[in-house]
Amino acid sequence: MRKSLLAITLCLAATSALAAGEHGGSHATAPDAEVDRTIRVEAGDMWFDPEELSISAGETVRFQVVNTGNLQHEFVIGDAEAQEAHREMMQAMGDSGHGDGHGGHDMAEGAHGGEMPAVTIAPGDTAELVWTAPADVDTLVYACNIPGHSESGMVGEIQLGK
Ligand SMILES: [Cu+2]
Image (cartoon, rainbow, N blue to C red):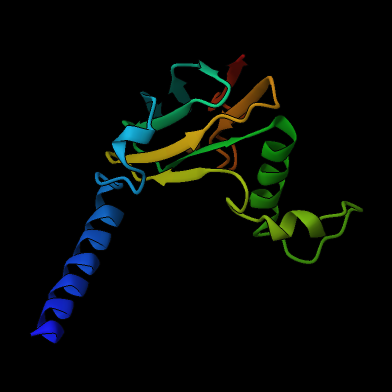
């Protein structure tokens, strides 16, 4: 009896994990009670709407990122330096064995999305990202770091109010 219950539970868990993966997590891992606000961000081909966000320090936000473009996009939150590092890394990926003096080892560790909250959204999909704004910074940047995208406009600023 216990065994079959367990099997059912595992099966359900696997199913919902799959569903979450495919549909961008309609059942977010964090319970609703912990989310202060839901912000819908539209990702098009080479733009975000809105172009900047204002969030209170410590506020927990659920981003619903809707990709209405025809290309795959990312939504990555980090400070300007981290975004720059992320971009360089993504550009360097197809570019093996070149060393131009950048101390890239630290970055490699936090490689793609390591420390920065990030989601990748396929065309037509919606992805959710629950994130709590830090209290110790004034501005952060959200960007799509797929090569060429942020340079073409897929970047915005997050103003963190006290
Ligand atoms: Cu993009």
